[in-house]
Image (cartoon, rainbow over the protein chains, first blue to last red):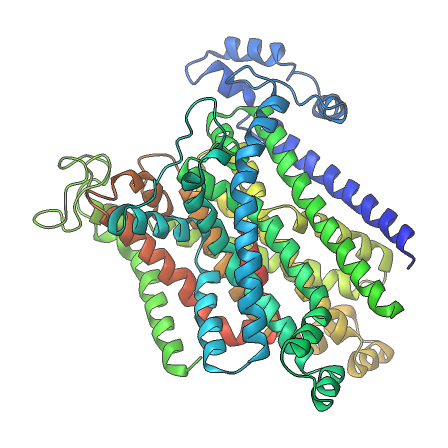
Length: 315
Length: 273
């Protein structure tokens, strides 16, 4: 398929995915039993009071009508007002995104360096002692839920070696970026969570490339050292980019856990809080944004892989 | 991985599963009334000390695993059954367009972060363990459908299945005699991988405070509740965390070979959370 039609198809699929997501978000927050009425009116409200709240929130209207109204507002960039803090959800979003990025970007860089380096190394020496050790230990890392990795770090750095603050408390009026010591632990926790699977995918891709005919051809022609590594790595790049996009998209989900544990005032922390307080507009806005970000990252990754492969075909 | 390590991983996982399931029967007295001051160190009457509210940690550890394990098992079974049905259906259907359209919808679901879906669905039905199990099952279905679909499509293209089609065998007969035997190993490995992911998600759900409400014990929630008292009594965090790690990592290690055969399988499971 040519590039432009391909992009058009992918963008259309993205739109479909976003529509599915928005229906799901709306259905889960407004149609399922635990809807906004209970949150606003409180547990001791009488039936009459609940009915009044229902009408005042517009929840007496049929669900499809309310969905279209909500979706229309979202398309115009209006995410509504938080029911807990009475602030504009869009405003909260932009404020929280900064803190999330302050953790996600260092984590992604860490993974890029370590998973990249070790993945290539282990892949080039498949079956060696180091490779076996790395594959074994990363398998355990992959099996461990993110929040336990984060807790383990917390344990180490509060109990046995208390050099870093366990909880991110940002002084008022400052951003998280000004406090690298507060970023270190959450970023490390996030990086460890994504490291295992990324390294394993990269290793598999490099190993596969070393057994291809052109890798053998390069070896037979006496290509050694850095040049050989470059040959292998450039040819293993497609799957590697794919692995990194999946990892980056996963970091957003892992962020919910890590931010909650370390009290990082990011999107995930805010979402978990909004779910706990049943702040419906905030849950809707935050989950839609996180979902859209994930889908966009995956699309960007697909596009990068596609462009890489095109370059290969042309040469 | 050596067979010995696999056996060790297998038995310890079974032990934790057993502890989680029969644990609640071993507890005498209440798990929610405070028995001493908060974060009392281990020893004496409270073998593992007390937690953030002064409750007995041992009793809470014993009761905190069952709902989690049951959630994971229910979600795995539900997810596998639906994944199997949808996966086979999309691969053998004569309405290729419908099958493809269904796969596109499944893909759209797979792209949404699992934890986000879990939070959303659990927020719609608050405080329910069943809702968490259902949400985990929903999250895992797209991955199952993909794997089962690919394998079934490959099997459906084999000569003996075409042969059966030409003989005029009915669809149920073809699925039963020609497709299922070849599908079984993949489906089993897939179910195992789903179980690992489901355990992780169930624990994370507990950690985030979804599922049954506050006084109920939950290994995931215990880790969160007690993380402020690490310096005074780390046991209410370490013990449930260790049990969860043995459970999740143990199954991962046992499945290692099966997962490795299907390249990238375990990595996908890891990406779920």
